[in-house]
Length: 146
Length: 146
DNA sequence: TATAAAAAAGATAAAAGAGTATTTTTTTCT
DNA sequence: AGAAAAAAATACTCTTTTATCTTTTTTATA
Ligand code: FES
Ligand code: FES
Image (cartoon, rainbow over all chains, first blue to last red):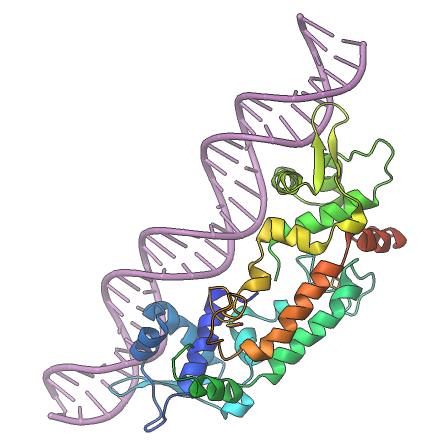
């Protein structure tokens, strides 16, 4: 469904959002250690999110990552689009191309009609689930299962 | 969402099911030519489906592939499980492991509750969509867009 | 200003997925 | 029996994804 990179990115953003923000920066060492993710690999993912203005990064001592936007304004859709692109939302379920209906063409594939509702629900879920929601749920669990 | 192999497999099964069945066999050359798929790669996929009793294969002159079951009894779920496994239906949306609730454990991830409905709809769609349905739709289109 | 801490960038390596090529087995038909 | 047709099996190549390693740049602060 989602690539490893994308799942790591989502988990990292939830983690950053649920950190107590004193000076507001979280180092990548801490993130990768707590989430048990490879540090340099996660770094590239967070750089992508920073370029998309989802995160802010700052170098130097006491540097790190923080959210660049209100967590209520960051959705899973934003993160997925940044890392995996929007193919999962726009591709045909059985071809390697954009769904013809999304593309305003004709001749949908045989599965299209059955799949249409699921695609809508997929988009609805990802665009309505915010990092704020998720960080709250993550915070309410004693055990860190991010 | 689905791997290339899986999408090719679905398209091939729909194609086989919509062929006029005289002697009941369709050669892989014809399938790969009409669907524009690489022949030896498709062969491997059809072999997997044959091992799972979804297709029958016969060697020798006039050999080829045919459905092994009533197309009303073959679902997309059968094909996806054969080729991609059931990870898409059982995995956590943000971890590389099985969803803890599917696994009868505790501590669902922060996205779990929001994702639960989509997972159910995903399973419902794939398990209720049959090759019979899809072949009819494919057949009703003049243009072959399988 | 010098040092150290931290992310950015770049180069490389391993694994998986996708695709190709070749040989072997089975079967039909003459 | 022999030839030909077709799938099965095997081995290999290419590409993308995932992951690691090293060097560079930035910046806070001593
Ligand atoms: S054309 Fe296949 S999902 Fe729309
Ligand atoms: S635990 Fe993540 S989807 Fe169930």
